[in-house]
Image (cartoon, rainbow, N blue to C red; front, side, top):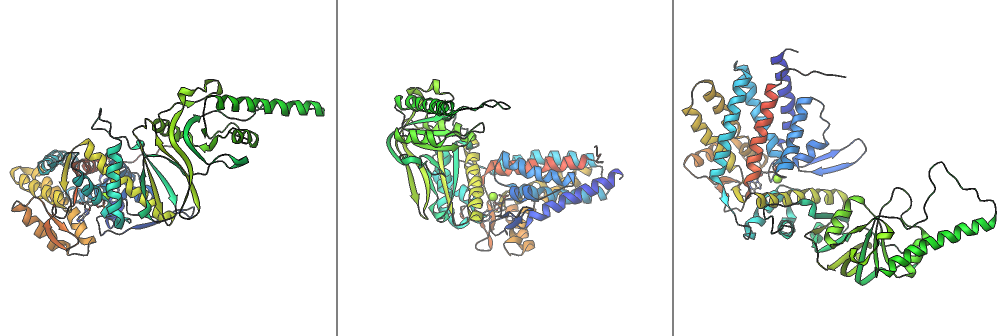
Length: 514
Ligand code: ADP
Ligand code: MG
C-alpha cells in the first residue's frame, strides 16, 4: 500500500478504537459489558480496562490501546480521556493531510502545541497542601463519579485518601508505592461494607486439621518458605521397600523428622505460622498439621509467593527459608490473630494490633457479586492513583471540560499570532481539544453544540473555571461543584495523546516479518 494510503488506513483504524470508548466518558457515560471467549463477563467504565480486553489486531490501532495503558501507568486516571483526545486529533490530522500538508509539518506543529498546552494547564492549576484532606477527598470523588460504583463514593473516596496517606513515608513525602496498599476482595455483603484495615487480612481459613487453634492472642508470627513435610527423593529415583520392618523405619524416620522441626518452631516461642505455597512438594502434610496442632500453633497455609514481601513488611519480620535459621528475632508480633466469620458464613483471617507495624494498609473490598467487586476494585485503583498523583505533584485543576476548553481557546488565540501552515495546523488541533467537553455534554444528554459554544464564550471572557455541570445540565463554576482532578492527569493525557498521534502520523508502511 503506498504511504499516504497506509497512513490513512492507520488513522482510520486508530480512530475506530477511540470511537469505541467515547460513550463511556464522564459521569453520565455508559458502561461496557465485555464478554470474553472463555465466558467471562466484565462490567466496567474504565477506559484502560475496556481497551485491554478488546482484541485489537491492526498495529496502529493497538497503539491506542498502549496509549491508554501508558496513561494508566503515568497517572492512573484519565484513561478514556487520553484515547478520546487522540481520536479527535487524528480526525483533524486526516483533514490536514487531505489538504496536502506534509505529515512532518503536522507532526512538528503538534509538538509545539503540546508544549504550549502544558503551559496553559499549569497556569490554571491550584496548589494543594497534603493537609487539605477535603480537596483530596473531592478529587478522589471526582474520579469515582464516573464509575459503576459512584453511589458509594462518599465511602470510597475518604477511604482511598486515608489509605494513600497512611503509606506515605515522611522521608520521601513525594512518593507513594501502591504496592503498599493491598486490596483483598471478598464476595458477600455490599460495597458499603468495604473497610480499611490496619493490619493483615487473608481471604482464607486457618487450618482446622486435628484442632489447630483458630484464635491466638499475643501472637508470635513466623513467615516460612520451607516445607514441613518429608523430603522427596530426586526425580527418577525410587526406594524399594522389601519388608515391613523397613516400612516401619521409614515411617518412624518421617515422624521424627517432622517432630524435630515442630519442636524447633515451638522452642522459638512461635505460635502462628504463615506458610508459603510450595510447588516442590506439599508444604504441610496431615502429619505435620497434627503435630503443629498439638503444639498449639495456628497455621495459615498456601500463602502466595508474591504476598510474602507485603506480609513481612507489614509484620516487620523476616521470611525464614530454612528450619535451621528459625530464630526468635525473625518473628513478627501482634496482639491478635483470629479467624473471623463475616456476614454470609464465609471466613477470613485477621491479624491486628501488630507491633512496629510497617507502612502498609489493607483494604477489604466487599460486594454482592463478582462483577461488582471487580469493578469496585478497579474504581478504587483509579481513586488511589488520583490521590497518589496529588502526593507526587501537589496541584489540582478544575474538571468538567474546563481545562480542555481553556486550552482550546488560548491555543486558538496563539495560532492567530503564528504564520503559514503552522498557524493553520495549530488552529485545527486547538479546536480538536473541544472533543472532551463536547463528549461530556453529549453523554450527559445535553446539546453539545450549544454547551460548547457557551463554554467557549465564558472562557473567552476569562472565566477559567467554567465547566459543564452535568447534574444541573448547565455551565457553572465547576469548582463550586467540587469537581477537581489532579493536574498530572490532564497534563499527562495531553502530552501522551499528542505523542501517540505524532507517532502514527510518521508511519508510512507496515512491514510484516515472519
Ligand atoms: P477517564 O477514564 O478519562 O477518567 P471518566 O469517565 O472518569 O474518564 O471521565 C472523566 C471526565 O469526567 C473528566 O474530564 C472529568 O472532569 C469529568 N467529570 C467527572 N465528574 C464530573 C462531574 N460531576 N461533572 C462534570 N464533569 C465531570
Ligand atoms: Mg476517571
